[in-house]
Image (cartoon, rainbow, N blue to C red; front, side, top):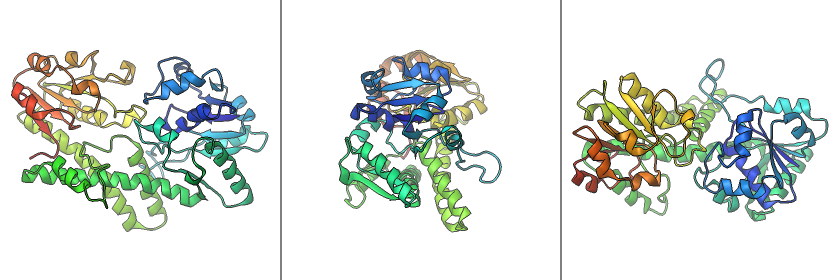
Length: 409
């Protein structure tokens, strides 16, 4: 039996759910103290959205996949325990501002009456393609202490993944090597995003087009095209959390230059958000006081990312601080998850009477929206800010929208 302890529905728990599909001989119990979350997992309205996840849950739920609040029982009966809790960022004390430790492992140790293989399962998946990535992973990385017991636990876990992943793609290495590999992968991807975002500011100042720059740069076989899409931010919380972990680790090891290097990647991410806000304010005649701004999209294309750290929330806070009236529509986020703004049931409703529309998420629905109808219902001049580069700007300009995008001079 495999137990998954989960403080909150996160992407970290998805590998265990996938194993129920690929390993029908294993029983998997997902435990969460939150009865509302447990009820959601037992329904067709899952607490997170990830393409393909509902199909996996439906196929396995009640057969070898179970959801429970009985943490003590699940841990006692388990052979493997996946710790799939969120890793919060500390706000006080030593290391404030960086990712803090979890108490879940202490709880498992207190409850266990026999030996367990305990797996700290990080959020190591690409949101939006997590299920496909799990079924055909580039690699499965398993780190452990290089003791006899550690290597035995490592092999036990490798046997689980070997049910569907080629054995040559399962990498078993030391504990610190695996931790740093995880941090390094996300840090380097975030670095690419911050790099292209920094160049987007240069493009705006010179009249260049960041899409053209990114496309031409990505043709270089040494670089490739991935993660060269300018945007408002990283598109989720995992990158920032892992970079701050790396910063904290570097400072703890008395490597201030290394810490400063990686901190700058995060600072550039915050700078990009401020630039987008400034673009909105300056375009709307230097003030958004009392103006109606419609926000389309509250989370990244896969709301399995932690929506409470999305770019939309940061921008909405700034809009409200400037005393703008904000309406929000997102087809994949429940109304209860969006706070302190006007929640709308459709994009047209959110945009009605708006001075400006900010498209913050790449939902397909927004690409095919009836933009002439949106324009007709807005205040004039009608401003449109495309954070995602998903809209046909020339076509929208013929409707008479004033279209603004990051990285286009």
